[in-house]
Amino acid sequence: MKLDPQKTAFLTLDIQNGIVAMAPNAEAAVTSATKAVNFAREKGFLVIHVGLGFSEGHPEIPDFESPFLMVKQNNLFVKGTPSAEFHSGILEPGDPIVYKQRVGAFSENHLDLMLRARGIDHLVLFGISTSGIVLSTLRRAFDLDYRSIILKDACFDADQEVHRVLTEKVFPRQAIVTTVAELTEEGP
Image 1 (cartoon, rainbow, N blue to C red):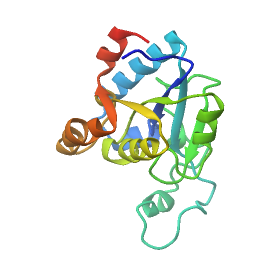
Image 2 (cartoon, rainbow, N blue to C red; image 1 turned 60 degrees about the vertical axis):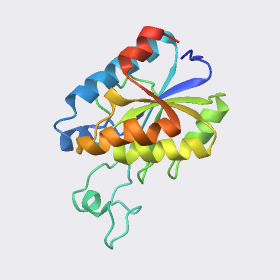
Image 3 (cartoon, one colour; image 1 turned 90 degrees about the vertical axis):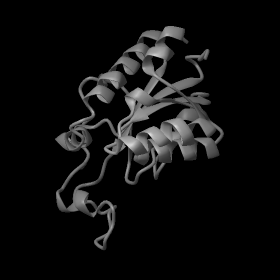
Image 4 (cartoon, helix red, strand yellow; image 1 turned 30 degrees about the horizontal axis):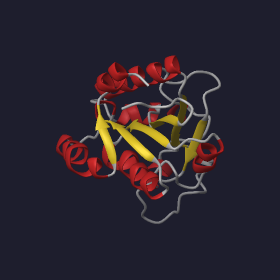
């Protein structure tokens, strides 16, 4: 698995303080994600952080029953607030940040434009949760003709069986599924 740092981006997906706080068993995945980000930086890969980010008052969320209604009711993930901040182990000053208002990383933002402008055609994906942003992002990336790698140990899902089925049965149809150790041992 030879990756070109000029054509590959590492995307951290929803590894934000508010998400990590709601996923107390995600520590191992966050540790693996930190290792992946450190490897990417050391080898010269682009690292982009994608996460939830709403305007004050959450005008992007409808008042009717929505999966995001709890976010609005609890005033979470407003840009610039602690819940929207990215985990300190993965973020460095100057890192590109892309906010979204729905599940997938490509939802209602300029991520695809940012990647194409840099000539990126390979993505390394990891984050919280496997059945949420990781699944949605992989599906959209596949439709946009990106080649993807999923770092399964740097992903977390509250349902371990769902995580297993996705990483063993579903994701391999559209991506290479590996671990941080396997990726870093082989190098770029």
